[in-house]
Amino acid sequence: MLLVVLESDQGNLAPASLEALTFGRSLAEASGLESHALLLGPEAGIAAAAGAHGADAVHVADHALLDDYGPELFGAAVAGAIGQLSPAIVVACGTDRGNEVMAQAAARLDLPFVANCTEVDAGAAEMTRSQWGGSLLERSTLAADTKLLTVAHHAVEAVEAPAAGTVSPIAVEVDEALARSKIVDRVVLSSGVTLSTAPVVVGGGRGVGSAEAYAPLEELADLLGGKVGCSRAVTNNGWRPHSDQVGQTGTRIAPEIYIACGISGAIQHWVGAKASKHILAINTDAEANMVTKANHAVIADLHTMVPAIVDEVKRRRA
Ligand SMILES: Cc1cc2nc3c(=O)[nH]c(=O)nc-3n(C[C@H](O)[C@H](O)[C@H](O)COP(=O)(O)OP(=O)(O)OC[C@H]3O[C@@H](n4cnc5c(N)ncnc54)[C@H](O)[C@@H]3O)c2cc1C
Image 1 (cartoon, rainbow, N blue to C red):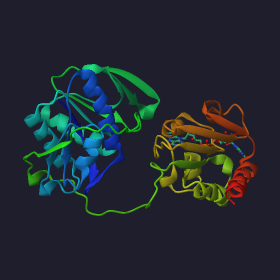
Image 2 (spheres, helix red, strand yellow; image 1 turned 90 degrees about the horizontal axis):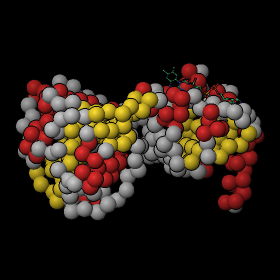
Image 3 (cartoon, protein in one colour; image 1 turned 180 degrees about the horizontal axis):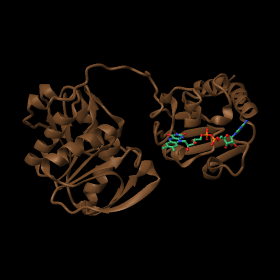
Image 4 (spheres, rainbow, N blue to C red; image 1 turned 90 degrees about the vertical axis):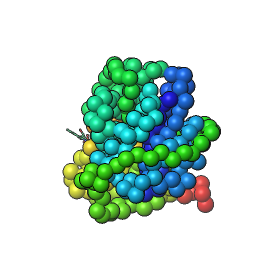
């Protein structure tokens, strides 16, 4: 059996879990295994989503101590479930939380663990994984009876694949003494569409020139139902908050279209933007990295081009 460890927060399934289920499903098929899912915490209708994305069975560990996230508790619960279910391969999300839980579980089971895989061969003995924020792809070999790995965020697109999704409870033993790291407060930074899930991102780099000059980019993002993103040069200048930064030390985005205005496309920015389905670069430099890597480019001053696009969108909608 292949076991996908789902990531959820207080009963809300993380979108990365659907990617892990899709990745797990195809790896299970290639390896001749059933694909199961493990949910820690309240079921809250999550099993149906897991079944719709390829889980033949969903094991639910609903324990009061697992109602909210704690790395040691979750790691111990995953290790306990692996002990009971004996999967050949365990796949979790390559998010901060997924990698943390798998590292905890791996340490408890004294097993090796490969994080942030982008491709895994049948049987999971060999894989490619993303290192250094995606600027290095490393080929790895994994020798263990139970193979533990996480799938890099946005390495695959979640695809529905209806499966039985049979739900069964699993009793895992977790010790309250492990509740060393707890969530004591939550701060909601943004509601509705977020940068990482926005279907459209309008990014602005140093070429925008000032905080005030983002107004047309904001207007374009609003018109297209998207969000504004930026480069680190911009956050360093204090023009936008760090929560808007795209890249290695910011958010990884995967919109339908990324409109990158006045951004050179340095590798640290590119690793956060490369999962975009389409990229339109607006830049005065035809040789800029972002321009040469984009699907479409306009070599122009963004200060005239962005308002022109805004006007055209409004005109067509009128
Ligand atoms: C450890 C580390 C981590 C980093 N993490 C990140 C990260 O997460 N995200 C990130 O973005 N960067 C990151 N960086 C910084 C990164 O290396 C670049 O310095 C940064 O991305 C550059 O931002 P930029 O493209 O806005 O600026 P620049 O490289 O200065 O590019 C500005 C672009 O604007 C164009 N331009 C100028 N005026 C106009 C105009 N009027 N109209 C159209 N185009 C115009 C120029 O031709 C140029 O291409 C990191 C660096 C390090 C060392």
